Picture (tube, rainbow, N blue to C red):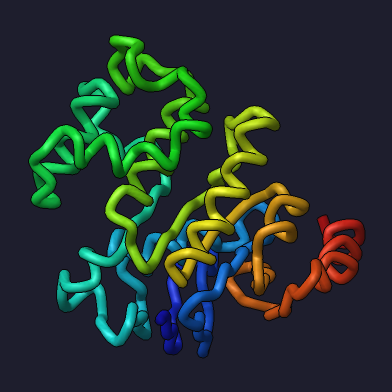
Length: 235
């Protein structure tokens, strides 16, 4: 699904990404972990063609996102609030997403949103609030739901557990693992919440100073001991 070849990105003297070769397989739930400045968000932004690598390339299902937009139809992502149209209400925002996805009927839009009612928890819809006036946690929920709205085969979420209360965090873990099980989608998440990442990931990449220094299988949370040791000694 994702192939990374010799990508490098620097900001001044700071190396943000230096990955000679890496592949994410179809159906992986890949967790990216690392301390602040490890390069997680930079990598996501290059995958989504929001940031150009200085060298090398990435490919999503064989498509270089810098050369074609064909990857967009099967990709859903949420990095930060800039992905939202915050002067709309959530209802208006999802109606807009429906229209640009050729989903014109209100009933169809509602059907797409129904699996996420527990995550919305009665705090997003029917509130007559603009997205920008929602709490940080509820804006986060709108962004995550929007990323999943078109049932993409690739989902990229940067720090999705940020701002969510513990109940919503657990609901989100269930949503992502069930979505992966039902659709076979490839899911990439980055998170500072190590336990949540271990709980849902089938594979974990540990980043340090822009480099992937560990690529760990995570069957039955098998990566937990090594990651806890790394962050206890290096974090």
